[in-house]
Image 1 (tube, helix red, strand yellow):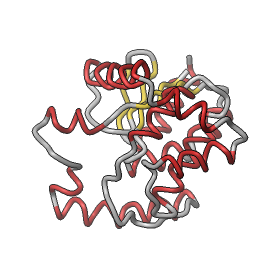
Image 2 (image 1 turned 120 degrees about the vertical axis):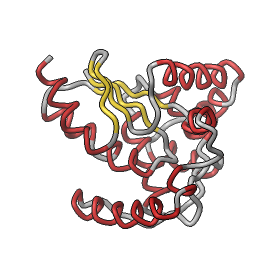
Image 3 (image 1 turned 30 degrees about the vertical axis):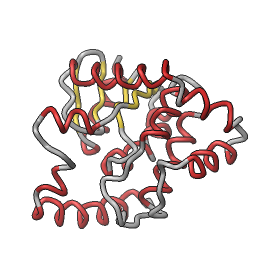
Image 4 (image 1 turned 90 degrees about the horizontal axis):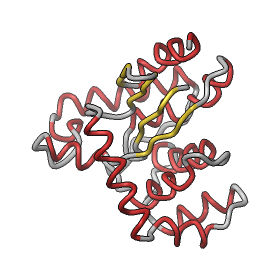
Length: 195
């Protein structure tokens, strides 16, 4: 089993979320989805936004790196016109779906909207579109997503990420062993496959 801690606003999470289910299935590994919010973690470091925005040289490098990585993995890519893009509503829906069979497909749909189609993903229209495309009850799920209980669950999940030492996304856990970044997904899956 591998835990996948991710955020829809995270460009490197895009690379992993789009591939993890197929890669894990090929190795007989179960994915445990762990959506969390990066914003509070960045704020705990004194950052008001992504380091890719705060550090211009790092940001320029990152966008070129994303082009290369998407070519490598044969993933569509459009640099977002707004970055980081707010993703509170789809993150709340993802928390509801974390143990549901539709979770991976929902995540891929939202990620494609953000990083391939350059669309606002933090809108009821976008989330509804993703849910309806999967044949899911969009109104029911969005109502549950914005319920106070679920809001508190997402806050608690983010606090759990901080408590485990997570400082960026994607982050993977195999047992208590942490692997940070898309470039460590293969290593994490190898460890998970070994059991």
